[in-house]
Length: 346
Image (cartoon, rainbow, N blue to C red; front, side, top):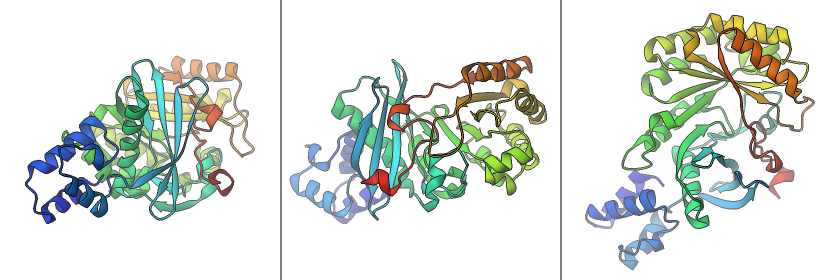
C-alpha cells in the first residue's frame, strides 16, 4: 500500500481525514487483505478505493511451505508481469522474520547465488518492497500463525544499495509508527559492497542494521566470487566501513558463504581475521557463516567440520562468529536460492 496515494484518493473523493485513520488501522493494525474487510467504510468508498488505488501492488501466485513449517516462500506477481520471491522464516517459537527483495534479479552476479542467474530486470518501487512485508502479515492473519512479524531483512533478490532511493523510501515506511511500526534494530540491510552508499546509509539510518555480503578476504578470490569487488575492492570497502563505524558506532554483520575448497580453508579464515583487524573494533564486527545452499552452479557446500574449524579460527582471532541456520532449503528458500527463471515460473 502506498499511504500517500490512498490519502490523496480519499481527499479526491471528498472524504474527511478520519477515513484514512480507519483505513490505516485496518491495514497496518489488523492486516486486512481487501477494502471490503474494512466494514466501517461505506460500501461506495470501499469500491472507489479498490478501483483507484488497489490495496496491494503484488499478487500471490504460489506459496510453498517447508517440511518443518518454519519457512514459507512466496512467488509474487507484479503489475508489469515481473515476478519476485520473498520468504517468511520462523527462527524460533516466538520470532518471525521476512527476507524481502529489492530488485527483480540482480546485476552483482555472485557466482554462488541463484538470483545472479537472472541478471537484472529492474528495481522495485518502494511500494513493491514494503508490500512484501504487508503480504506476509496478511498471510499470517489468514493462516492464524501465532506471533507477530517484526523482523525484516533486505537479503532477498537484488542489491539494495544499487537502488538506494527506493530502498530508503521503503525503510521510512517500515519505520513509520503510523504504518508498519517496525523498530530500526529489527531491520537489516545487506549490501555486497557498494562502498559510496555505506556512509550515506549510516547517516540516513544509523539504527538500522548493516550487513556486508563478503565471502572472501583477498581481492583475487573476492573478485572471482563477487564481481562487485572489481568496482569497490576490499580496501575501498574497509575505508567505507571505518567511516560508517565512526559515525554510528554500530555493529556490522558480515555474511560469509562457505564454499568447499574455495574459501573455507584455514588460510581463508586467517585472511579474514587479518582484513577485519583493519576495519574496526572487534566488538563491533560479527561474522555469520553460511554453509552453501546448493544452486545451479559448480560450487559445493563445505563440510561441517571445516565450517566449525573456520569458525574456531575467527573466535581465536577475537571475533564473534556464528554458523547460521539454513531454513527453507527443501523449498529453495534458503540464502542464495531465490530465483525466478522460466522453468520455475510455470
